[in-house]
Image (cartoon, rainbow, N blue to C red; front, side, top):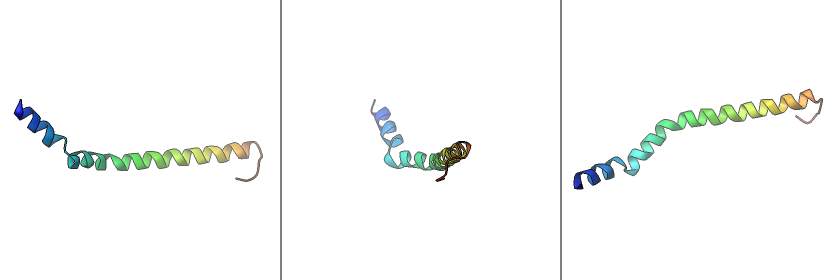
Length: 55
């Protein structure tokens, strides 16, 4: 049982978890920027479609 606890505590350290987050962050950033760009383009197109100003 002691070996299991030792393996879990070494495998779940803060540096390991932040290392995994660091590998995922480029994908998260690209996804957020793509979503924001898609939202803004959709909003502008809807205003143009309704012939409203103030883009």
